[in-house]
Length: 377
Image (cartoon, rainbow, N blue to C red; front, side, top):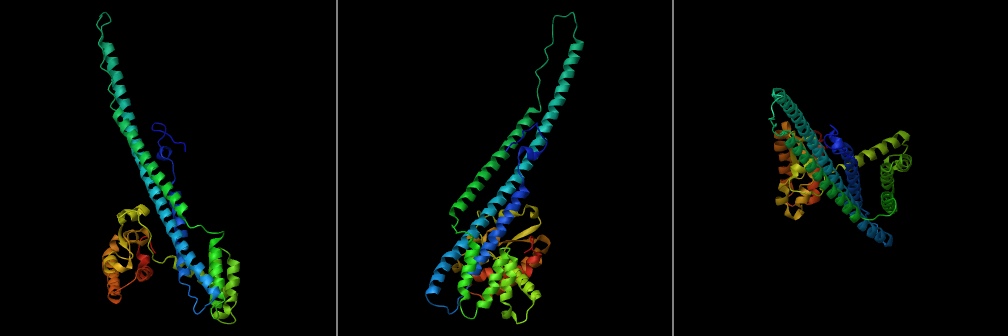
C-alpha cells in the first residue's frame, strides 16, 4: 500500500494507511458468526432422542458426537480471530494517533528552522552592510545552527516506531488467522444445512416429536434466510400449536423462532483470552468506554476457587466473552449489591455447581440486568 512521508502531507492516514472502523466491522461480523455457530453447537448438543434405539440411532449418535465439537471449536476459533482483528484495529488507531504527533513535531521543526534561517540571513545581511568596502578583512559568519533538526528527527523516529509496531502486530494477526484457518475443522459443502437438517430429519422419525422437529426445521431455514421454506415448514407444525391456525399464526411462529434463536445466541459463554489483564482485553475491544465503566466478569472470578472441579481456566475466565462493562455511576448498586446478592444466593443453593450451571446462571443475570450494561446485553 502506497504511503506518504513527513513533509509530504498533513493527513495521518496517508502516513499510516488503514480504516480501523472497517476492521472493527469485520471483527463484529466474525464475532456474530462465531456466536451463532457456538449457539448452534450448544443446541445440537442438547438434542435428546428419547427412547429411540437401534441401528439408525447408533449411526446418528456417532455422527452427532463427532460433529458437535466441530461447531464449538469452529466458533471458538472464529471468536479468537475476531479478537485478533480488534487488537489490530486498536493498534492501527494508536499508530495513526502517533502519526498525528509526528506531524506536529515535524511542523514545529520546520517552523523553527524557517525562523532560525530568517534570523541568520538577517544577521548576515546586517554584517555585510556594516563591512567597510575598503577593508581587506572579512568577518566570517558563524555556521548555521538548525534548531528544527532535532524535532524532525524525533518526528521521524516516532513515525517509524509506530509503523514498526503496527507491522509487528499485523504480522502476528495474519499468522494467528492463518493458524486458526489451518486448524479449523474441515466441513463438507453447506455444513450448517447438512448437519442441521440431517440431524433434525433423523430425529423427526422418532414417534411423538415430529411436529416439534418441523418447528426446529423452520428455525434452521430462517437462519439461512430461506423465509418461504421456513413459513411452509412452520405451517406443517401448526397442528402442534393448535388446529385451525392461519397464515398470521404461521408468520408469528416464524418470528418467535427467529427471536428464540437470537436469544440463544446471546447465552453467556467463555472464550479464550490471550492475556491475564482482562481490563486491557475489554478496553481494546471497547476503547470508547475506557474510564466510563467498571469491567466485571459474567461468571465471577470467585467461582474458580469455589468450584475447582468445574475446570474453569484463566483463559476462559478472562476472555472477552466473559466480560461485562458496568457504568461507573451504577457500579455501587448493580455490581456491589444486586449482582453480589444474586451470586451469593447461587453459591448457597449450588454447593457443587458445574461450568454449565455457572454459565446458565450468568445468562439469567444477563437477561435480568444486561440492559444496564455497556455495551448492553
